[in-house]
Image 1 (cartoon, rainbow, N blue to C red):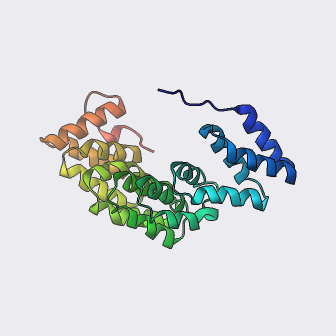
Image 2: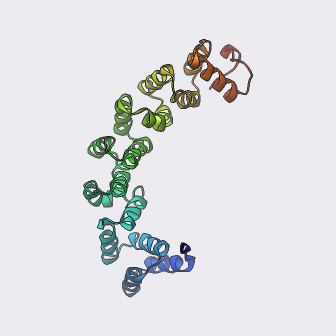
Image 3: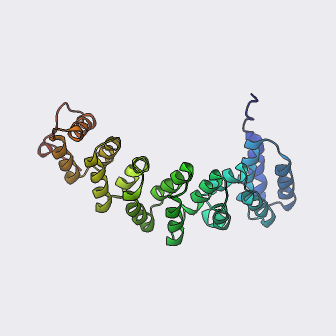
Amino acid sequence: MPRARARNPVAADVASAIVRSGSQAGLASLVAFTRSSTNKVQRRELLMSLASSPDAAARDYVQEVVREDTPEGDTLLRTMAWSRAGDFKKEAVAGLRSERPSRRAAAISVIGALSDRESVATVVAAIDDDDETVRGAALSALQSNQSEAATDALIAAFPTLEKTDQRRVVYGLARTGDPRAISHIKDVVEQGGNSTYAAVQALIAVGSTDVMRYLEGLAERDDEVGQVVGKQLASQLGIGAVVDLGQIAIH
């Protein structure tokens, strides 16, 4: 099996220097060199350098690559997701129509970095994609996006998710601190099953007095849920028995 080609730091540094210089001749040569390069790692780094250039020709070439429905185009699109998502929204929207799941997932990564409600609605729609990779990208995007629209969308969608997808997002849901989110996670805990552990961990991470008292009450139950909660409280708080929360300070 052929070995993957290693990163060439010299080429990357030279490319960055050319971009910073703004030399038209240098940029034209860099674009030509990038077009001819067969080293995938090197090409990606060179394309990233060109993407930061104010030169229209250099940026046009980067967008040309991004528009290609290829693994390289996917990688570049994902890389641009958080730094320049707004510049590549058009390409991302087009990517949603691709037959390749990796392209649709890359597109969702870009759209998911935008906070307007239209973009958030597009990400929410991708939760129903037939491919698990795309669904995962959509859920990750909603968790990472700190906008009010994304939080509202994730909370609204949570009850309809498959159990495996709920486990993916309980921590992100808990981080919002939203009472609606906490209520959903409590429902998952009390349903028992494979999602209980992750949901309990998420609630412990919240750490508020009300949530910890709620967990203490569950730990007193003589069933599977009570056992899981009791063990997690003991493990996370470093004790061998259920804590009397009146004796400790929880911040």
